[in-house]
Length: 596
Image (tube, rainbow, N blue to C red; front, side):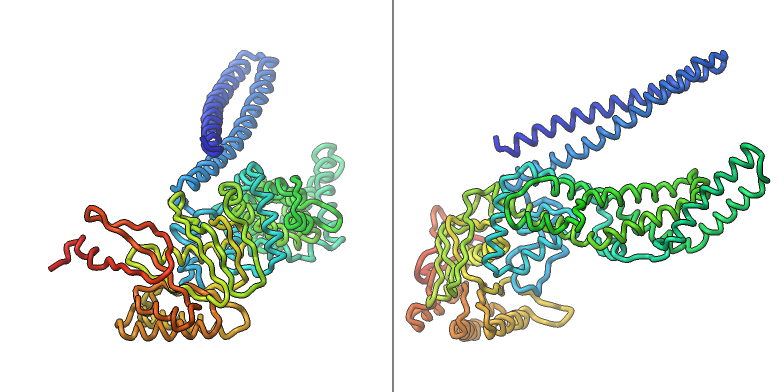
């Protein structure tokens, strides 16, 4: 039984136990309320005042205790359910049944991106869906950036690899961090408006004479009530005038205050989640330079921890939330509660508001790191990529597709100067496109700092471009062939720059006739070869294999093959040198009934 299966069993038992306890406490709470009412009413009826007050005190205290215990268990249950889901998802990830994970990153899909659409980086069955463990808006976006904007700094990637290695070992830490984030409000994803608002300021509530007046007026009005109604020293009109003045003050700028309160209260649940996530982060010790630098960067100049500062904001928001209670209106009028809250809020914004962006970005960074660190823990045998300053290099032993869980077929692959281009031939369904995606998606992981699905992996820094999954655009009246030409134009333009280009071309020019396809493909590959681009080309056009001889072996032929047994077709998906010698299209047609 895997560690995840054991933890699933553990948290299933915990969740069931807590659920039963909550049900029991609910029953006791109801019994306490009913018993308290019956005894109090009976004691009052028979004028047993000692019993009346004793029962009110005892049963009220017991009821409050049961409410507190119920809320405590409710929080524990929510945490247990989160941990159960995390471990259940982790088991599914290893088992290969992760395809139903809800968060697919669909909103990040971009058909015009250099490679993400072709390599299944986002969407159903994607790299994002497989390994994403982020919950916050900035975390999801940071992870998306890592997968779509490759890092080409060797030192930076080495530091990130060290951080991922450390986090990989801290499974318990990652799971708790993810569980804390899972309570984020689903309806509030975008944090930009909160960050901008907290970084702004309203100088009115920071002026000393305004603060002094707002603090003084409630004291004077309450004192007037005591002197008037308590001791009958001053006329009762004076405290009434004080209340009228309070009401007038509260009505001034009420729309702006309400908008401010609405903004911060909308994010109340998120603020609480961020506080708990930051607390978990800041109270833990890390060794890697990458994470230590991240942790030090969110501490204020006076050494205050960010989660403590967010805790103060959380309390202020709690006080603001009280004003939504209709029964709180008299308190608001008497204490000028709105202004007291605004003064506290603006003071907090002046001291800490400008740091919120850093805090949330740090959380996003840690979420992205925690996502990739899952690979380090689940697949310790995968290779940590090595980066070389040599040009045009990919050296891989036992490379497989990371998303084909437990079904990978591993191949060796070497690309190095002057052999910059591999031409892959083979029959339908033999594995050509999968090989291209295997190389591409492992490069994406490598440039993100993650382990790759290989025994050994070394690469140079290259800009990745693909042309694999091109479709018509009816809105713009663009055919798939012309869309393919536009993508190839982008790749050719990129090869004119200073940086190395790595390309993946799958069945190019399939939208035109065989004669033009052959000539066009040959011209394109020759152009890419001349521009010192690096990459793989898959094709059914076996005649293109002649280019190996034309370039003195610098364009190298590889192929996949199949075999037949008992009228069935079988593939081994193993990469072999040379041009394919088999075809299966006619055989497949016969299998579905197309024959003479």
